[in-house]
Image (cartoon, rainbow, N blue to C red):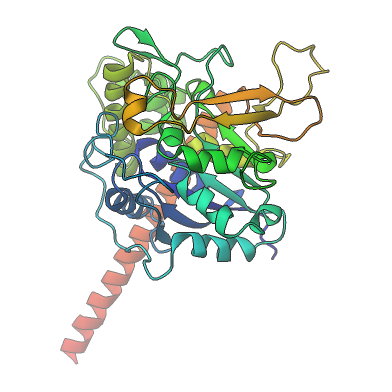
Length: 415
């Protein structure tokens, strides 16, 4: 039977929100993960690689999805000190339920070579590259293999921030100063981690990779900050839709009772990660309703146009336009590459992006303004339920095999 699922290569730097990106891609019925590559970012490359392998172990996909080791630093810049204020020392602080990896990463093949081979094996115009960390691996892939630009369906990125009322999202503030970016006042982390990689992707006709910008979808902070993991969302993750639907759970508590145990070990782990993420976002950015879940949105964006029950609609039109006559919006994106990491911390605009709206019908970067948030949470919870079922089935099969082996051993001794 023909496999009509959307093939994707997922490049990530786990990362609390990367955990949910991996889970969504691994268990969405319309998506097939070709492989995972890791990159420096939320922690060192060594830690993000271990985290990716641990997440796949936790969701029961360690043997099914290979992990490859990517870049430990930017294309042309010195190594960046991994931040610890948001994701902690490990990159996935907040839980002791994350299992050690059962399958190690593949180190015999460079990540971008593995990605190229997997993507080229897919039919033309079918596969996506999704990058939720620094854009280094994504840029390196298309720089080394420019023929891939015409072959893939698209490149979906989480990164950057526009500000200026592009959406109604609250981007937060630090020390009383409102910001656009989350690393500096102007720059989002994934872009400033490697501005030259971002420029290679976006600067088509201006020294960048020819044709790539027109195939790129960008999910900036302006969109991801619309999708907050509120207390109600955490209830949904912890207890499942059926329990929440009964109305007995209120902000993580049963009416008239204390905190209940989560539905499964996986769900408890996920919510513990979210709680850690929530505290750091509250402490650092003053966002108290819940942390934004950035990275899964870049996965969800590849479902655009599938036209069935699997699509999570994103709006890439000006919401102020006349209803029914809104034109799709495409942008020319520019990245500030001048300045060092230190300059950026001192107030330079290094890593800032700007977006110029292109004339109607002209190709450019797709930057959605909104999405169906309720449907996104529904679909994500359904993927968690599928993971629960897969883990339970694997556990039952393992127990049955152990019982059979024990019975055989007893019979052997008896004979």
